[in-house]
Length: 320
Image 1: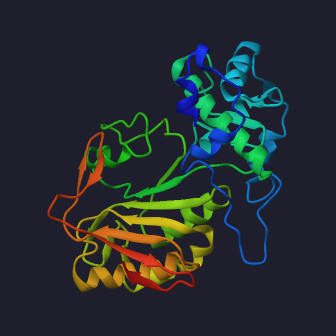
Image 2: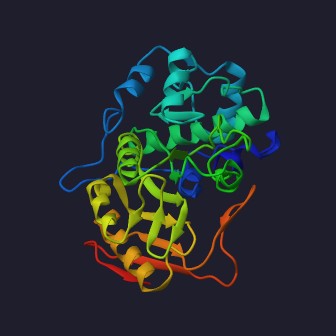
C-alpha cells in the first residue's frame, strides 16, 4: 500500500480512505489468539514495557507540509499521529531491530531514520502510516513486523551476504554487520536449539511471528548450528514455543539436504507437529544443496526439489 501511495502524482490524488489497506499483503500482523482469549485491544497486549514507555512520552506531530502530503495521498487525517525520535526512541527501535515501528497512533524511529523530506524517508514513513490506519480500523494496537530470519553467527560473512539480503538494507560483507533493517524484518544469530527458543520467545512478546527462516548449513534430517544442531529427535523440544508462532506460519529450513530421503521427511514431519502445534501452516526444505547468491538470497539448483509438509488443524503433519 505504501509504495502505491508514494507513486501517486499530485494530479492522481483522490480521497481513498483505507480500502487500499487490504491490498497490502502480509502487512497486517495480528497477535496470535490463544484458546479462550480475544485479540489484545490495548497497547498493553503482548508489548514490552520499554516500548510502552516510549509511546507514552510526548512525541511530536507531523510537520504541516508532511502531514498535508500524506493526508492527501492516503485520504486520511494523520493530525493525531505522534512521532518519537528522541534518544529513548532510538534506543527502543534498536532493541527491537527496527528502522521504525508503529503502535496505535505512535511511530518510533531509529536514529537518523526519520527523514520525511527525502525519498527513502517518505517511503519509510508511508509504510508506518499505513499501519496507523490498519490498527485504527481494527481497534487492535500492537507492534507490527513480519518475518524472523535466524542464522549461524559464526558463518562466513561472505556466505551470509546472500541471505542477509532478505532482512538487511546495508549488510557489510567485511564485518558481517547490519545497521539498517528492512521494514518488517527481524533477525538473530543462533548457536544452538536453546538460542532458537530464546529468540522466538523474545520476539513473540511484541510481534506476530508468521514466518521463520533458518539460514544455516544442513544435512539429511539435520540443521547445523555451531554449539549443537536441530535433529529429528530434539526438534520436539521446540514445542514449548509453538504457541508463540502464528497458526498459519511458514517455517523454512534453507540448509543443504535437510529434506533428503526418509531422514529429511521425518525431520520435517516432526518439525511441523512441534513448531506448528495448532496447525494450518507449512514447513519446507530442499532435498539437495543450496547456495547463497549476493543480493538474491539462498537458493537451490534446478535439479533439487522442495519437500513441503502441511500441518492440519490439531497439529497432524503430512507430506503435501
